Image 1 (cartoon, rainbow, N blue to C red):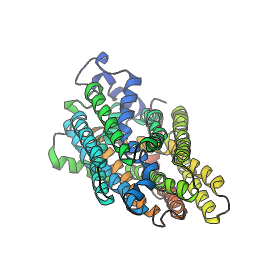
Image 2: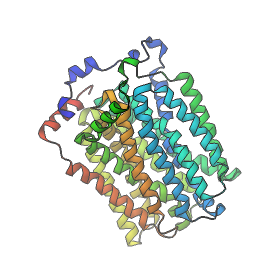
Image 3: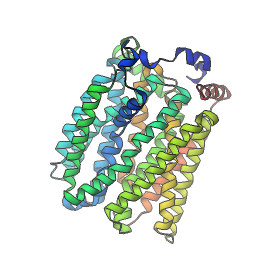
Image 4: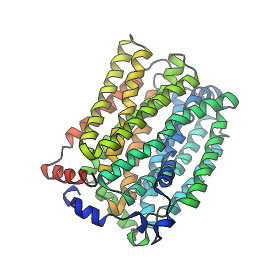
Length: 434
């Protein structure tokens, strides 16, 4: 818990070094930092790949499978449920077996499920297969975060999570563009075939290049009871829940935008899939840029302050979007800036909230990462059908969801206010490696 956080000097002395984390392998046996960043970032891409690449195709899937917007968006829900439950299973398993075996198994499942999605005959079966696809993709997401915690803590972890946005930000930028481009030459089924190919490439990369970052002497050998105890310790940590819920509610606001934006932009405002992809990429570029600013200034201002500032911006963007849509007077000229702010500010919310949430759990990073992922994707799963409740003719459900989740995220930070002792411990953590 936060009252047991070591001093900065102790953390520096005890933090595992990169060369120690491959079963005693010398540093030369491990990938260079930049290559390692690309590999871990590639694993973190499964969320954007699963979600964003087929967004421009949602209206076409709806037409081809003779299903309404909510029925098609339900495939987003099942994918998110799979991503959440898969993390809950794979995270603790990786604490016991190491990071590599569950990761490779999950990647194989992702590839097979993606191929099966390309052959789905109806919306219901597509939704079911997307659940399996999410289970497989969860391995990359949860283990990528656990690997970061294996190697870094405190401000260093916040910086690394921010740097990951250089890679993971490419997913939201490129995935809709790839999907829109594919729709020019193939049907939406081709999108899932490309997902299978990308999953195969990531599988080959992980199998041949990714080191094991959790040595045998640091693994949980206590069995199921020990795993349950670890999960209970994480779930009952007030500090973890304050940061994990703020992060997850912010993610939910972003996913309300993800789930509803293609219908709003294409069906209501008449944009083409290609133009929609460009706007989506612009917002993702804002997210990446904010993440890099966060990496540069987090040592000076601390994760706590930057997280609070990001949450305030998130709530402001959501409320502004609701006012614009509700008034009906500003159209895209008012909607686009509000969505940009809502998305970009997560460059401050995500990295800092993750670093603060995972900091207290170096020996159960997989379990903590799994619970964080479960909260994120469960909220996303609940949001997806809600934003399509009015069909493709009204942007208000999306705006209400974004505003409600954004304001809830900052409210969680106010309600779960830390004690003075907690704040002092957090201040210590924020100066580690500053």
